[in-house]
Image (cartoon, rainbow, N blue to C red; front, top):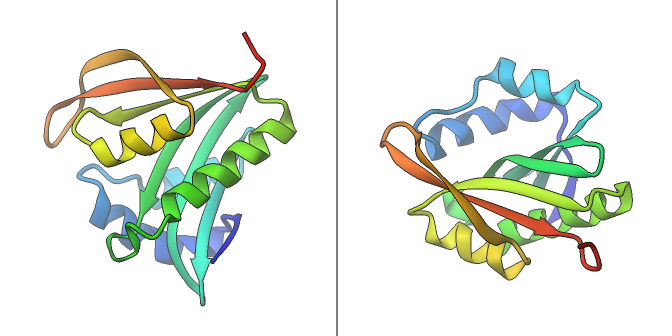
Length: 148
């Protein structure tokens, strides 16, 4: 498995995965808009030409907001999400990003456990944030080691 930056051509595999995994998926134009920006980074996990998952972040100065994380259902429980998160955290550290925020469905216990394993803490709740089904978003953040 390799982790690399997402390319526009990857959207051919990304879009069906996005629709399969999310009740309100991003559009292809939405992804394209983020991919051409200088303040974003999207990574994919690829194995033998198949994209297994992706992660994206939007950065402003020394802070970042994870915008999207997805792992193909057939690739789950193979550390794809962990490898993507590790690669993203490494790249953000190299870029000087010291604080990373995210939101996750309150019912997504697997994702919450992964984030907590990598030092994210629960620090808020957005009531009714998600649609289809309506659900609260758990807010989490992570400070780079040594940052107060």
